[in-house]
Length: 432
Ligand SMILES: Nc1ncnc2c1ncn2[C@@H]1O[C@H](COP(=O)(O)OP(=O)(O)OP(=O)(O)O)[C@@H](O)[C@H]1O
Ligand SMILES: [Mg+2]
Image (cartoon, rainbow, N blue to C red; front, side):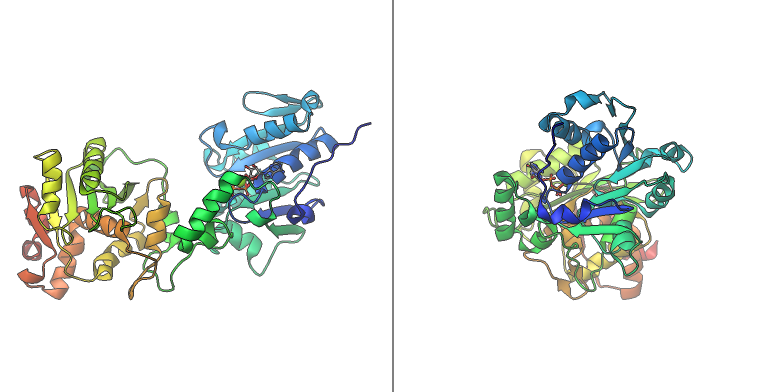
């Protein structure tokens, strides 16, 4: 008889014993996925009739699952004769099985077919409380287990509330693992890590140290609001789409970014963040990007904050392609005054991010009523706020009724887009 030896990082040792919940959380590249993939292969060797399901919240294709990783482990341990790697699942020669599902494709009825399985939830930070509630009682066979691996986002995420709050369920083994615990940490990731340490210090602890998302105390947006509204597809009934641009003064490599965000509003009055295309570079570069987005989304106009460059901003677009409707806006009030009505829409559940825009979202969670607590300038947030303010003219209308700003205080100036005049001019909005 030959003995299979699976080299295992010390950090995962507490997870080698059977337990109802075996859990590993931590930063990028800590070896979590490799550990559980190896563990599953080992369990199937010990008990070849066992059935496992690899679960993700969303799984559009097998490519997004751990299928490849597990198949590679089987090959690396030279165990091909004990397994059959099929198109959509992996079987053992004795009736054991590994299947792969996305929770979003299941209902509480359809999930019942998984009774009798053990489960490994990958990227568990994205799991909704509904999915967690559905999965736990489903995995009910004698001795069945649920494994979780995840990169924590927020203490309020369902998996963190379930496994890392004061009341940890019985029979839970949980470890934290980070890159420094991974003896096989690849040099490519090491280069990425060093770059982030130097250039993205505000993100470093979260991405590589497994810490929760940095969130400024008193932030006017929370990841929770953003996550709750998140959708995977943009609706096809968007009645208006605009591209918000907040150009930076300088085009040097280390200058602030040009914030460029595409947003839309649906017939039902819900706002969508379609894409964050922010960039550094010359004015021509942001101009071309904004126009590319304008074309791609068949947008109605490009909204540009003109504080940094005045009328030149319109010229940037005109010189690339004349005739595109451009709304020039001028920031005369503080950032948070402009941002708060937009954040209120998030709190009402009316704004949805299509997929994710991690850098925009990180900036959003650093904006407080006292100012921006991140490093540099929140250009992506500014572009978002201009775009949403353009799409939700009521934000300005209501504010102006309260504040009665004089013409001189108005934020908007309209150029080249006649139909926008009524939206833009606050004095008109008051009379509406
Ligand atoms: N047991 C192992 N054997 C060989 N290589 C490994 C092993 N564990 C980790 N690695 C190497 O370390 C890298 C990171 O591991 P892994 O993908 O498992 O980390 P992770 O914690 O799941 O990361 P992420 O948070 O990015 O999903 C792998 O791409 C692989 O190169
Ligand atoms: Mg992983």
